Image: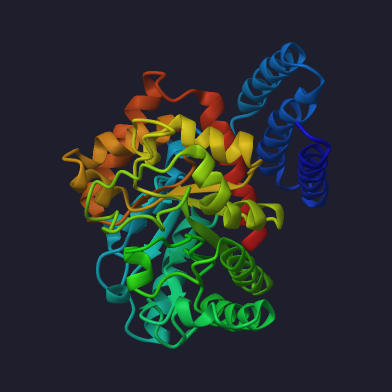
Length: 401
């Protein structure tokens, strides 16, 4: 580990410690899960002193997480730990009684909103308020309310910007992009939305479907990096969490990765030189969320990215990302690969992705939740992994709360 990366990780750990100290004493559970996350970060930082010592510290930290998990009756149950990882779709323009009941039971951690869920400012405000009230009155953490608001045609909230498509935004200066994103973020925030599944950090190659849809900032990796980082900063200044997508990059794809099983044959060296550059820069600037693509990267792993531990290792160990990860639509990944939504949800959770994005029916996301619970009960998803994800997710919710 070089000095620059070590310094970056030390700073990240210090930021987390400061976050713990800022939390009031009346939130002991949140303090415990964030402290657990900090403890689990320290072995990675101190690992520069030697792999053997790092392994010992990692084991000690894992043991400490188990102790924290057993701390009191107020700690989350296994079902609640799993529930915080689910970001699910809402059907119609108001939450159903069944969805509200799932939120009250702690089986849902976030909601993804699409254009069909939104008809007016007042209606959207009522829907979001009803869902947040269901979480609050049952003692659950607040919900992440997410949408896709990239710009141009990819805008679920029609009265919020950016009106310009991403490709047009890319022609502006970073300062101008940041202002556009902040203005959009303020509109989203006023509607109760606290997560934007944007910006697109993909670097397009010839024939890129993303470029054809005008969803990429530029063809030069450095320009994409500057634009994506500026967009993310603008959203954060409005207290909306940005989600960089689609790691480790789908700019080389000529077919939509939500509809087709796409394999991208780029080597690690090629990905590092081009595709990873925007992610690396935005992560260094403090990006809180990274979305994992639905593509497969044979040079890295034969498994598709949503359930590839190697892709997770590339993001967390190589790039030093310590924030929250989220899948792209798992319904798309399941359909394009002939799998069930239950199986891909369990595989993604086992791989260590924090948030599982389900865009299908409420019934299908409910079935996926039960499948992941069963996998956790059988030990396929370690409790320490569930605690780490819970810590990251609840810390994110505190940051945007």
